[in-house]
Image (tube, rainbow over all chains, first blue to last red):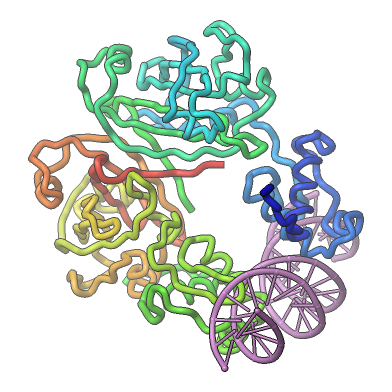
Length: 239
Length: 239
DNA sequence: AGGAATTTGTGCGTATGTATC
DNA sequence: AGATACATACGCACAAATTCC
């Protein structure tokens, strides 16, 4: 017998939230633009202000909107300039350092483990692998491998890539990373990593695994960064 | 005791949330137990139901409570949520884990290096050193040493300390930690650390160095946490 | 099985506080 | 200082899920 999925009505605030999400994704409100004030928007959508607020709060939590008391509700802007490094959290041991990266290799790979991290439908899906070396004040401090869905681009070569991968995403792939999760530990680094850093094979290095979500809340990248703890460290601020 | 600045009034729903958090942490409601119904709880706290609901929703988001429509609000048995302890950022490799800590030793020490981190006037100043072992789901995963200004307390013993050190600060020392900075790398752990974790001397472990600022923006604590990367890892979310 | 009571979820409206412009 | 816009807090009515008889 065919499945008889009961079409359940979603709560109004969810429907409103998805509607607004679609509007923003379609570009009806540009990044950085201010949305109509709550009372107007609620009236135009024929819902109570409280219901609209609940929808907006959810979108803010997803990183799609920014709400500022006394000012307004804004579509989150794509990061520009130095803000492109807002998610870069390595620093020299003495603090700071100017980040730079160069691309070592770009290749098409297949990895069920990574596909799962990217929440892809097919674990056999093809992925772009990008291997890069990272510098702080021109001192090589880390090596990383980044995986993205191959469907973002038919062909990809080291020459194509911007130095800032996040800038590349935004300008070429038409999305940007709005949220990431990092997990840090240490382990024996693969040989190709230690080679690039001029360290003996089998060296234990610190490792950062990252999952990155786009502005439309899709998992878009997974990466693994190995850094030399004698040269740099990961930093975090919480409040 | 050191003086601290007058605190700004927090929103009622935050106050209520923290109150309930403390009640649960203190075990006044056992894991799995159902809380009083919203209307009663709100009445007993002299707040509107909506305000209480906002507090409960936040605690649910933090993984401390579970709310079931038609049934009730329950204290979560094994919270996997990440924000049970706002500034505790270790998790098991599979994710989550209930944090616990016990105190190994409390002593008065002197360390110019740490005094500098604490931005103290006299580098020869005396400090309290608190050494603790940390657990996730009762599995020992990390060992840490925390230093604070000795002037916070004339005498300090392991028995005096709350299990949550931050709660101890707030209730006994009359300040609270509102912001921290973590720096993560890996290094050879001291012998007293590897001993406590049952690892061979000279093992390389992941290390978190933390500086904590109080509500009045003074550096109040410095700590060094060593964790076993085979058992847990540090996590961070950015947006 | 079924219906009533209980409990949380949703939605609405309003008044007041607070940050920003 | 005043206007604007979001944040907080209150209260009420009804819907949906669960529990109990």
